[in-house]
Amino acid sequence: MPEMRFTIRWPDGALESCYSPSLVIKDYLTPGEIYALADFLRRSREALTIASARVEARYGFPCSRAMGQLARLEQAGQAYATHPDARVAVEAFAE
Image 1: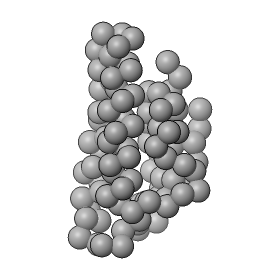
Image 2: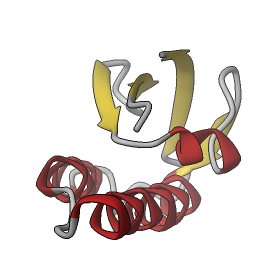
Image 3: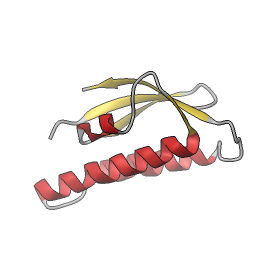
Image 4: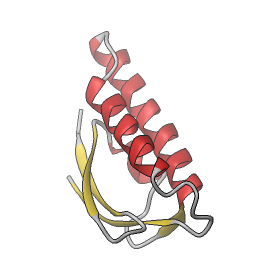
């Protein structure tokens, strides 16, 4: 399966390199776009869940790295949850 990394910028300006085991993330996030925090987390949750399911369909087990990445995004997102204007920028994709 083609895996990829994508770089995001959190509302405080911190960059983070993220992992997806599938290119499906491209269907949910676009480099150069800025998403409201809740929208970014929703899109990430959906994409990484699909990516993990694709790994399971192919190899017989879900992708723990995808689920770990999702948990990391959701945990980090909680730090900005009280900021109604919090936005996350998708900086780049790397295949």
